[in-house]
Amino acid sequence: MPTAWEEILDLGTRRAAAPPPQAEEERRGVFRRLRESLSKSRRALAEEISASLFDRIDEQAWERLEEALILADAGVPTTAAVVERLEHEVEAGMVSADGEAVHERLIEILAEVASTGRGPIDLSGEPAVLLMVGVNGTGKTTTIGKIAWHLSKELGLSVVLAAADTYRAAAAEQLAEWAERADADLIRSVPGGDPGAVAFDAIEAARARGADVVIVDTAGRLHTQGNLMDELAKVRRVIGKQLPGAPHETLISIDATTGQNGLRQAKVFSDAVEVDGVVLTKLDGTAKGGIVLAIANELGIPVKLIGTGESLEDLRPFDPADFARALLSE
Image 1 (cartoon, rainbow, N blue to C red):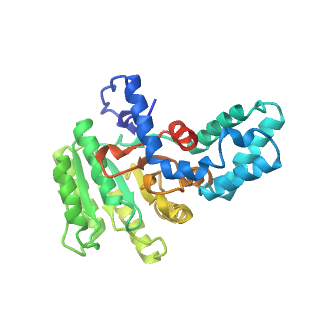
Image 2: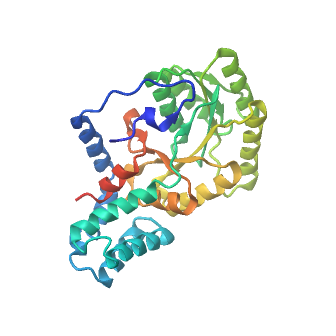
Image 3: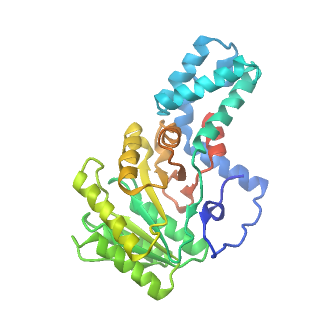
């Protein structure tokens, strides 16, 4: 069953009502939309990774599998580990040397890799503080707005948005539009103001108003700019001093179309602010869907949300099993 928002969030004492069971037709519809959104990645893999690839289990089949996964941006270390494991299981008789059986086992292994380190988004604090980081152009601010909308409109939580990206022109205005749409409060400053002060004020406002969640937007820093990364770490320290234990969750938005560069971004950001999870955006616009596997396997940072389009419904919790099956389904 596709992961629901209620299942991906740890709300602490603010327990959301159990979601109604999904009808089979609804589950199929969600999977179909995911499969369609991964069409570019799937087409890129379809010619190489199919049941027919394993009609003859030989060295050439394993080499073709390696090439396909690397081209899909699964990365060399992850690809080597996946292929070695599958080859060993077939040779040891743990998996039948039947094309369909090997293909099915490949889907299971990819799902296991994508599940690495997976856990809920921690919104158990009172108030809970969610820190969003990422470079320009990854859809970070839009993601914040969509998260706020789901928390407010679907789960009934009160949300405060902190416009701590005080450098990008119109960043606060963009967040203001989402705040209005999600019925969330917005805390902002003058252009060029201190980002840490905005985060501080937002937490103060949330406490005073009894709000449930604070989501802090930050400047879309290039991960190669050391001084800006230092400032991001400072914002995190300010949040921690204002509210011990916060931020309770730090998510990085990564544009799936950037491939291995996204992997490097996640590594640098995680060194600066201890990233808890990834929001992988624009997954519908790339043939590089394997980056999900590389991030989880090489960095141990789980993908928690995926963006596959412009609508609110296109930001959804990441389900590793559905992802692997949608990626390799014929």
